[in-house]
Length: 78
Image (cartoon, rainbow, N blue to C red; front, top):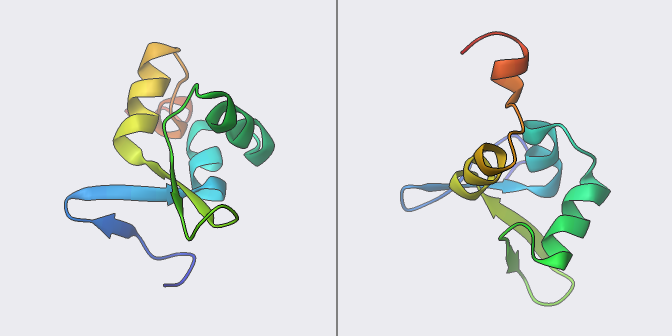
């Protein structure tokens, strides 16, 4: 699966650390920290050293709860 492809599982969309960080406009290291500390739900794929994926719905809920504007809101597209 290429890095630009959507990672859809059923009807849910999953984002990589890089994609999720860009989506909520924080660094990848901040996003990993939030996941590690339990602030943001995530899924590990491929074992302990595997990829971390975030459900798009969880990111949206997190942004709403913490009043983090989406990139679309910041650009005035909403």
